[in-house]
Image 1 (tube, chains in turn cyan, orange):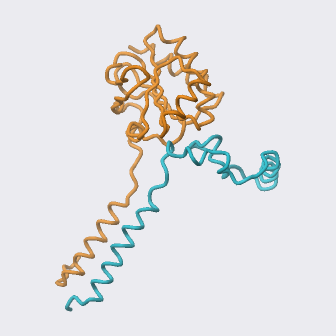
Image 2 (cartoon, each protein chain N blue to C red):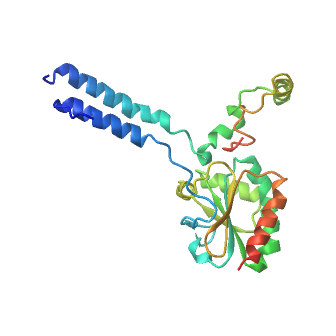
Image 3 (cartoon, one colour):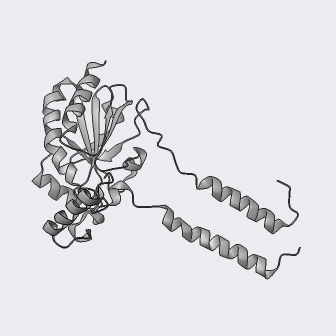
Length: 77
Length: 171
């Protein structure tokens, strides 16, 4: 079948979406998390309150982690 | 796959195949027994070259000023350097801060009595496949990686110490 304008548009759209998709494929490396380690980047407002809430999550749901960036912006949690 | 006469479809097929292949994740290829990657960086006073330290047991530690466990590991590393230094042990602590000021400020609060190198771009960290901060790599006298360690906790002290002692004992 002849290559119509429609085909070219579809191919172009596919190419563009693939290229932009690359942005999502590269999370920050372990050593690039300096900004994430700053206290203002944590979710909680009051550290004491945060500890209280985390204790409840731990005892009621056995859930841990997911907050801060792992004890000081580290890639390991 | 049957060849398609339509060039556009053919191109799209090849492109799709390439995408699928290239999106395969890279495997962790640096492991114990592998030769240590290259490390040639500026230090505080002079350059630091890992290849030049062959014959010594080298503890390469990647740290940054914003990393809490790194701060805890520095006194331990000071102890290690003074204890094992005479036996041919060298710590190379590579700083990965984007800004040198942050590293300097950290070093004022937490002094380092061992070699410090600076890699703001993180090229050496990529070569060593650093997955967490801090990460340490024990390199034997032959220039091969003996052990890899991620993170730092007080409980790690003993195992790290014995690992170094063992590496120093091997000729």
